[in-house]
Length: 396
Ligand SMILES: [Zn+2]
Image (cartoon, rainbow, N blue to C red; front, side, top):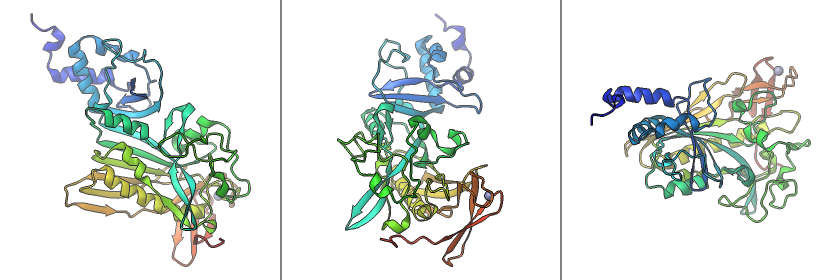
């Protein structure tokens, strides 16, 4: 029997047809204990809801399923997942139980990482340790990627090679911008709880204790990266005067595996309310941001296979916002090890302006001549904020 007419047209044309049928589609499926959202290329302004219905044509025949999925995985991206055990009736299946989608064939991922801090004592000194915000069982969040890591290890194959990682340092709270722009999504998800310090940041030394009553999301039975926990919500970095330093440990990102060939990390600066006192302290960020950036560069070497790499950074100007720091890491031949960081440090931030009383001025680093004073200038009114070069542990 000759093949049906559809299969007599050249495969390149069939792939074009699959491509247009898949465009902007965002299927959802389950693998182990995860609910996984994928997308196939997304044109700006054409965001579709996460629906499987539009992809039922894949079930037309085994050949269409096979060819359609081959096309799908050329541009499929992991966009979101949550820890979720529920019935799988929504999955697209051929046999009623096995999803047609396979996480092991997805090559790209775009994941968000929300960081917080924990108080850390070492050798009698106290530090702010920057850690993943933790897990929130009700919301199914897996902020240290541990559950995803377990699933990836259990797969027969893992095709992941392109990673985009959006890193937020806890509250990037910005009152009027939409949350996609500011990284405010977690604050929105969790609703109330934005009670952070009307008296500055001194209170935060206590705020990270496990038994802190204010922390509605902590799990007092466990306090580790691998089990459910939630570090104090809405706290800021401690003022440099009050601690001995800032530490990072991005080792948990190894949960994502070391098979990546290209990693782009985007660091989104915290929102700072410079004089209301309930934002992140600028002085703390001046000291901590370069440490966070160095840590992200070091872990990129590991995720990229740890043999050869080229890692470079750049700054992306954002309209009505603080500049984003981008780190681009690419796998390279064994003997090539290029690490060039030229744009580290707190370059700009959004905060209240004492010059024009605007609550959302973008301040950009004006000069840091090493004379002990660092100056940031407001973009709209030109007001200059002068800060003493922060010294850690001065008032301890
Ligand atoms: Zn101003």
